[in-house]
Amino acid sequence: MAKQDYDALAKDIITNVGGKENVDKVIHCITRLRFYLKDEKKADSAAISDLDGVAGAVYNSQLGQYQVVIGQAVEDVYDKVIDQLGDDVVDAEATEAAVEATGGATGGSNKPKGFFGTIKYGFQLLIGTITGSMMPVIGLLAASGILKGFLTLFTFNLGWIDESSTTYQIINTMGDSTFYFLPILVGYTAAKQLKSDPIIVAAIAGVLVHPTMVDLGAKTSKNFTEFLGVTMNATFLGLPIHIPSYTYSIFPIIFAAWLARPVGNWFKKVLPLSLRSIFQPLFTLFIVSMVVLVVVGPVITLISSGLAAFINWIVTLNQAIAGLLIGGLYQVLVIFGLHWMIVPLISNDIAQTGHSVLNGLINFTMIAQGAGALAVWAKSKITNIKSLALAGALSGFAGVTEPAMYGINLKYGRVFWMANIGGAVGGLIAGLFKVDMFGFTGSWIGFPSFFSKTNPNNIWYFVIAGVVTTVVSFIAVYFWGFKDSDVKAAKEAEQKNVFKDAVQ
Image 1: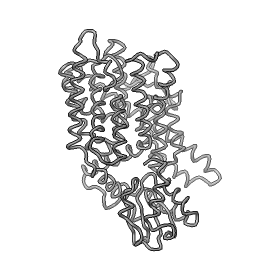
Image 2: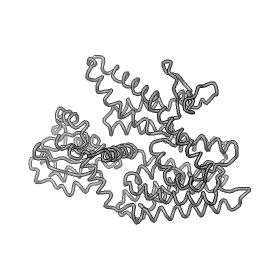
Image 3: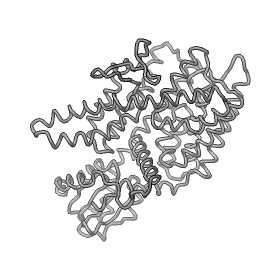
Image 4: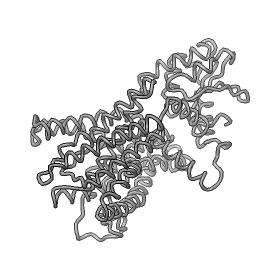
């Protein structure tokens, strides 16, 4: 839901709860607007539930509240409601109590049973947190991906822009900015969703992408010790640690947003009021940054390094099998930021040999996710879903899959997996044809990277595998991966699980 729509949404909610004259007080918790109405029978729950940005509406007779489920944007919508109703309806103490009471509620009656139920539930919450944190920046990601795609087209394909010119550098910076500073943007949105302090979490993200950290992450000298194949390129309080590149990453800062809340709340309780404003953010910044840098970042790097070695081994062993596995599963690594240790393998391949078979196989996973989003655009009749899906598809075909994945494909999970079927089929065909790639830029816009001086058929093999990937992903998603009722089901799931706090 775009922020500029909050005024209209607030107006529609007020109208459908019976108008300004029917409202006594309004408070909010972590996900819901809670109205105290003079006559709850005047509220139109069906009309409110159909509003874009509302996940449901219910009257809680036990509390005497009419509750409108909003989700992470509840504070923004609440502010607009107050702007229109006036300060007479505000009850700050009741709002604070409601927020505290629902701070960790996930719905006791919906708690999973059994080991596998717990794993599934935890994975759903994790994906929900990731997609919820990414949604506010999807538009920026899509715009940046499309801009980078056009810049590649105009520079390397058409020759209209010189790569060494300042024009190229300036436009490239525009396209890269969102991705380079993605931890800061996602840190802010994740903190709002997880009820941490957005400014503190954004500052922690600033630590991760600070030029000093970027320089440390680039150090790979033989003078450094190694642990399980990972270079210990820094020390912290005498402890050797590995500093990876955190630009473009999201998982470490989402973890930081989650950890910052209990750490910050603990210091809020124990620190005297006179010291709290300075030392609470100081201690939270230091402790959370330390945990991410010393524990989370290196752990992710170790996992990524192991996966990279395995993938490289598979590619060397059998290119067709590698294409099938990479095409079907590579984008799962992207979700958790585990793919970044594979980038050095590709860079090394291109630097030493001028080509990368591995990058050629990964390319089809981008096409698959873009085609999945395109199928949603073709099938859906919901305006905002169509626009989001089309932007994601264009960005995916321009080599940036995040807008498609976080905006549509992961949110409606079958889309993601049906699209991966196309990626697996395309990767298998590419492996059988032994497709090679002679550049970094992938997906459809990167077709020039598949022209080969020694194998003129390589470009046609790419086209065949790319078309098959697109068609299979599109058909799989169109017929078995998405229907408009999934949008409503997703809202209901949020209301029953993540937003289950009415009993508090």
